Image (tube, rainbow, N blue to C red; front, side):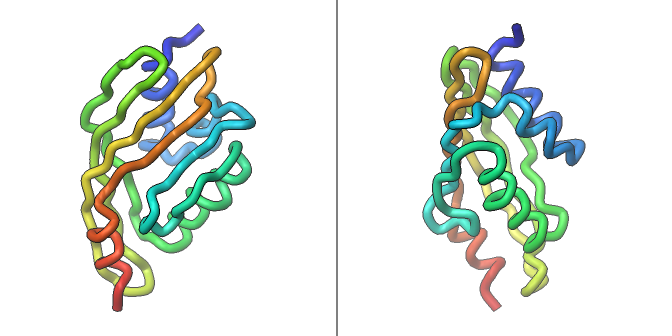
Length: 130
């Protein structure tokens, strides 16, 4: 069985290659995925179908070259922290942004059971304003 750190590392590797199925492969059906208030996909989404529809589909539709670049993973056992940066260009305004972000992952039984995002939502909002 993969370690919790490897499960999260595999998610980021799948993200880097644009593999949505790979990104969601280890997500528990009841996983709670929370995007920060003030972020374009704000809310808590349950399971892969909601996460795909309310987070990744929205980001892909509204942003050009939207990416998260992982800089560091911190292994906390049942919790893993990913630190990096978002970047992309908002399609409606043509404005680009780059914002630092931290992701807190909680795992149990070899599955992702929770994700919480922390980022500078003001930098994202500025790119979205005409």
